[in-house]
Image (cartoon, rainbow, N blue to C red):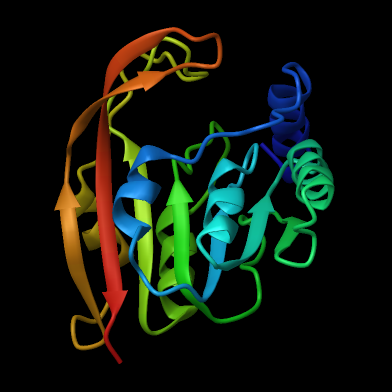
Length: 208
């Protein structure tokens, strides 16, 4: 499967639903990032932009990247309508080809899953290297499938946070795992339905 197919798929995912006027941030982001000193953040797979806009509200400057041009254009328009265009840089970016330029104090990858070929370990390794000393990489993966998920494969396997950390294979002299657990929560889907889901949460901090 090539990048064009991935573009088309994810553009279709967003184009088939209305643009979000007030997208919500992910629960694990608000839980983990609240209280951290703001700086420069990178949101990988920004989607509707709830995380990016919330981070701006906490004082961060945000680069928000997504493979979907529909998602990126909607976020740029929404940020502009709130007078936040100078704080949110929304960019269409295919992580399978390259990693966004820059150095960051926080890099978030929430539910960075795709039916297309993507070397996630390489992407997350690049993210860790793009952190400034003291910066954090927050990876939140699905540990279960919500009823509204695009992926309803009954044979899907959800690697643990420790497995993800092992795949990234970072030097412990430079990066340390601050958190690796699998909490449960009640999630709300796009149609207002709710279900209990499992998150796989990994927080890696660059120490030097």
